[in-house]
Each structure stands twice: as structure tokens, then as C-alpha cells.
Length: 194
Length: 194
DNA sequence: CTTGGATTTCTAGCACTGCTAGGAACAGGA
DNA sequence: TCCTGTTCCTAGCAGTGCTAGAAATCCAAG
Image 1 (cartoon, rainbow over the protein chains, first blue to last red):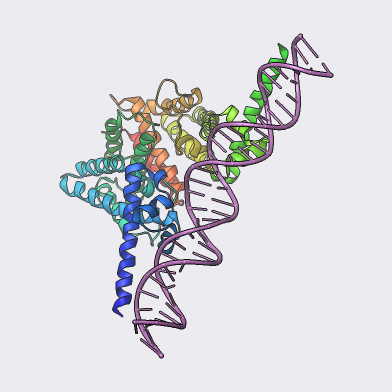
Image 2: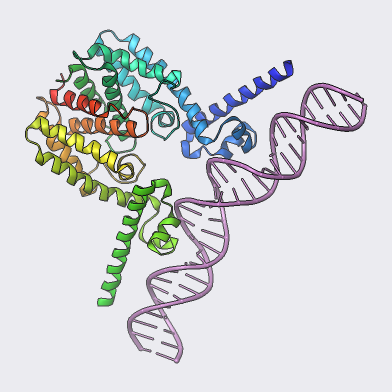
């Protein structure tokens, strides 16, 4: 059944096309511009085709988010391995994270701000997501104080980074002192808490 | 012209009614349920009346957010003044903040997550907003290390709290270890960063 | 080469959103 | 009682996510 295979291949290809189009459109014009009609026009098919691939718009965004996690994980890994010293690694990953959020805001939103039905803090979380978290964990672990739960500490550090970038991007924190705030966060986590 | 005054009074009353209805509806059914039609029905007027008071739905949400800031400021103040010791105050305010976010998620979203045209980090920010920030500042200042910018440190602490509550509420962080994470954040900020 | 049946894809439409133009109802002053 | 200016509502626009049912397409059998 070679025909069947070709069809499946074409379907998979089209599915990738949808996700890519959604990502590109979101990154260039924001998620508000990503409507099902617009997306359909972009891939040169009609709207209902989208629903034969995904349950709905949310599912498409989730697919974009998973892709984004893979990108983020790669960037964090690069930053981590390039740094020498535990404290430097913590700082490098933190800065890389914030940099990613600023450079690709739409992608970041899909991953971490917009509501999604993606399983996050469970075992069935997508692999790229776990990888990204693992990268942060890898730099937090060495700076953890005696008796601290490294997983929880990583989550807390992540939350700090997330708070900084989201509040800044929404205009709730002034952009100018971003570096200083980032430095403060990193400093306070590198120092260890009593 | 007493008639004029009565009319202004009635208008102001109706405006309060709109904001209250929006807040109540959002808190009981979420912001998605707050549509202009629903809101109009709630106050027993037609849709266009809303637009004679506010520029649009966003402006109504902004009004709700300002009210929310006042509420938050009051709760933070209570927590701060009830605590004795600098470190206890820092912890109490942090917990009160997180508690507020969990107890009144819709209000919190209007204030700190949904996009708004409210001026935040500028001089013309609404007074309740500055008050709420001031409450956090008041507990961060005493624990700041030598040479640390207390304003920036407050912003960073706030970001940490914000990150924790938003990631948890969106299901990205498991709910169960919330207290521990909060404790870690507080601990790392109370300790001072090197 | 033609036909039949299954699959894929599209057209058209639903119920909803925020928002607004233009006419109706109402008020107070003469 | 009429007139004028304000207030308010009805009706509608352009857009959203999503879907039912018709149309077009494709492959295999005759």
C-alpha cells in the first residue's frame, strides 16, 4: 500500500506546514493575527482542513509551544555548556532564558503564558518541555544549599525568571533596569537561602 | 443647577455599578464570561451605555484592576503590620500576595496578567497601584544588602511571587509544593545576594 | 476507458464577540 | 403644549472559532 503511505506522508507534511505557518504568523504579527481563516489562507487550504489535523486552535498553539520548548532547550543547553563555573552557568542560563523570551515573545507566550491544555508538571509532559526544565535544573543543582530540594528550587528560579520577563513585556516593569533585576535574581539564588 | 448634579451623581453611580458587575461576573465565571452584552444585561441597560462610560471593554477591565490594587494593598498592609521582625514581614507579605492571587484569580489576572493600557511603571500610575508596590517595598527594604537598589530588589521579589502564582495557576507548576516554593523564594531574598 | 464508491475538501452557515451609526424616547424650559 | 437637546436603544457591521452537508477528487473494479 504505497499510496496509503504517500498520503500519510503528505498529511504529515501539511500538519508541519500548519504549525510552521502558525508560528511564523504569531512571531511576525502576534497571536491576535493568527485566526483560523488567516491560517487557512496561509497554507492555501480551507478552514475545515485545520480541524482534520487539530482539535482546535488551542491544539495548534500547543503544537507551536512544544516546538518552542525544543528551541528553548537547545539555547539553554548552549548557554550552559559554554559557561564555566557553577555560578556562571546559573547566570548564563538565566540570561539565555530571558533573552529567548524577549527575542521570541509570541513563542514564549504560547509556551508559558497563554492558557493551554498541555500537560506540564506531570509524567506525560512532552519531552522538549522536560528537556528545557532539565537544563535549568542542571545549573540550579550545583548551587543548591544543603538539604534544599533541587526540583523545587529549580521551579522557584524558573518562576523568578518568568515573572521578570512577563511583567516587563506587559509594561508592568520598566525595561531599562532589566539587566540589573536579572542580576539580583541570579545573585540571590547563587548565594543560597537560609 | 441641582438637576445637573443629580444627573452626574446617577451617572457616577451607574459607572460604579458597571465596574462592580464586571468584577463580580469575572470572579464568579471568569473573564471569558464577561461580554459587553452580558454586562449590559447585568446592569439592566443596553450595550452602548457601556461605551458612554468607558472607551471599551479594556477600559472597564482596567477600572476593575485599579480597584483590585486597592484591595491588594490593604491586604498586604494588614499582613505587614501584623508581622514582627523584618524577615517575618517579608514572608507575611509574600504569603499574603500569593494568597490574594489564589483567592481572587480573575481580579489578579486583570491586574497583572491580561494586557492592559494602564500606566504601570511611570509617575502617572494609579495611586492604588503605587500603594500596593509600596507595601512590598516596605518589607524588602529592611532585608536589602548593602548597596542594593531597594526599588529594583522589590521589583525582583515581586516578579518572583508573580511567577510562582501565575505558573501554578496555569497548571505549569504543581499545586502541592506551593508553600515550599514560596518558602524558598522568601528565604533566598531574606538571605541577601552576593 | 468508464463507472462506482469512498475519501478528501470546500462552501455556507451558526452562534458568538466588541463596537457603532442613526433613529426613538425622554427630559426640562418656554 | 410645544420645542430642543440629551439620553438611550434597536439594529447592524465585521470579525471570531467551529461545523454540517454538499461538492469535488481519487482509486480500484468492470
